[in-house]
Image (tube, rainbow, N blue to C red):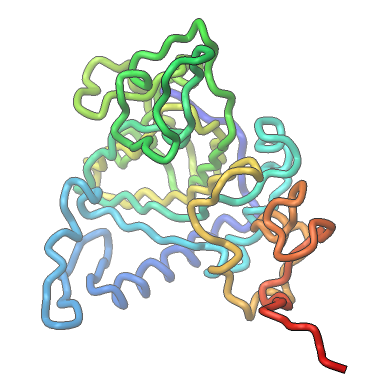
Length: 303
């Protein structure tokens, strides 16, 4: 058992209600209906085709995901710039981190375990000078030998990702509480996707309102829900500003929200230029706009 201690109490009820309302509405719009933790029906998609892969083991069974939460409620946007995030994620990544993805995972009764993974699976491993290496664009989620059994004499990669798990309901040993392997972040290795039976897996148990912060190298995954209640979790993933975001926040942000976003939130969404990276034109820009002025093909005027 692992018990996170940091408590997130402000607006807990509001966030939970917003999440459940959004989940029900999105479920209906996408073709399936959840009510009281039970799948009522799988609906027909356009063209009268049933989405037969919607609830496979590979897709988490009956679990429901919601993405791009920055668009789906002020309570979710507030999470991105919460003081706990500033302090704890800033301790891991430094002050200029950005939002990678802001999503919810509702683990429902009957939901299968996700399996362990890291959120830095794409990070190249250290190599000896002159040694051949896996080309960065060819790294895949299915870890190769150098990721399963790394040569730690060369060192290990530092953390460049940090996660915040906001527990909007109790996380218990029966409802799908997050599985972790303590200390795995210091091994330099990735978990074997074929067989995880030998790993000393623990579950992160916590009361509703708990905030669990962990870095991206830690092996983790959603647990199986063998109980009879939903497990409501919001997972907010941050990364260092030189890395690509999972969700394209700058394109995906609802433009009607722009004027209400603070400069702090805009920066954390990725609109702040970092050492000339992320700019549109001038390398001296500090912040980009959602609808920037663009200079196209020009010709000198004939006067």
